[in-house]
Length: 329
Image (cartoon, rainbow, N blue to C red; front, side, top):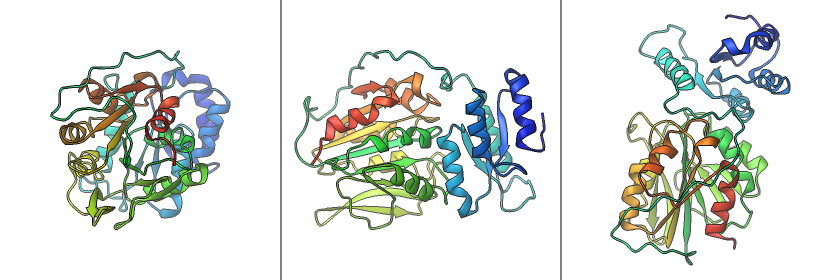
């Protein structure tokens, strides 16, 4: 179906929503924007997997973040040039997103309310260091990775963290350049902790959340006893920039008493390889998300199957699990 404006699309979805597997939504329609349409879908209790087609204009980024917060599955940026050639990759990105939204291999039923259930804690793999069982004293760090469905998930985690959280947090959210700053600003508006887009040279401080800048890699370095963020132009790994594996690998051998690793919704398996390396040299505690609460059960599934997860909890309990592990100042 092809529709000229939001109201005609809404009428179609009211009558035939079961006939559509996915909705491709231009962000700016003649009568409303994508976020307004999503809110109307919610009010009318219409369930749809919506992929937003967005411009890359800076002023649009915050609106896209709000739409993801209100339930959009994902977004794809339009090419700057409207010659739809292979060089700009627009068609490939869009088709990949549609395939993911309609796939059953990694897709959980995130739009169906399910009763929460306890998941048996997996057995941690053997490692060369002694894993500390109880809460650990000393400097800690929270390092989180997420992808598709991540912005919405972060909106349910970061605002619940205590203002005086006794650790800094670093986040890799797979997102293109120009959108991570808006995501950070939006989360900062809603949260007690400070949330910001990472800047090269930032000194990590407790109670602050740093989101990796889209289009760059993020590493954590030790500089004269201070933990410094380094943003680099190094190539994408597995098509990802930022890449969570690179962030975790940069922490291998660091002097944190404990690193709390968190893996949330997303396609693929980014983060698991890096955490495996980190587990060999550092004391870690790992938390991941249950399948039923993921938009895409890809990254958490790969991580769970690695045997490294210490806790597997619903999205609504992720913030509590982090808070209990790191404590407050």
